[in-house]
Image (cartoon, rainbow, N blue to C red):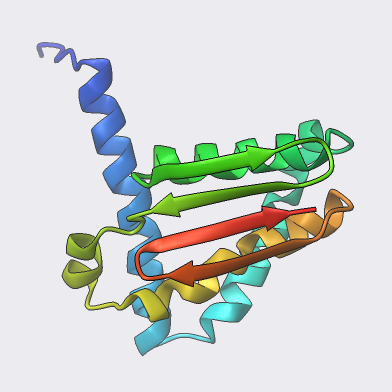
Length: 143
């Protein structure tokens, strides 16, 4: 058996697509078959809380950098980022992409509840969190 070598770019693109597909596939499933998406999002957010231990006590800037990393690694484009230790705001565009939404038969509105995944994390970090969507851009805010 021969061993195939993949470039870092190939691996990154595959991982990015897999991440988005898994999230959108789950949202599509829940929309058709399962419990409310909001229940799944809350559950998952709470499951992820322990992974944010290294961010605890680091302030809004550190929390936002982790959020931005998550969305950019999933294919989103960072449009703006303003931050200091007490508050941070980031605008991420085009996650998920229009093509990905179409593939899974979803709208941006179908995906909106997903952005609440950071609520339990923010509470754990002793921060407040909110988000808002304007078209294909989502603004995240910690304070």
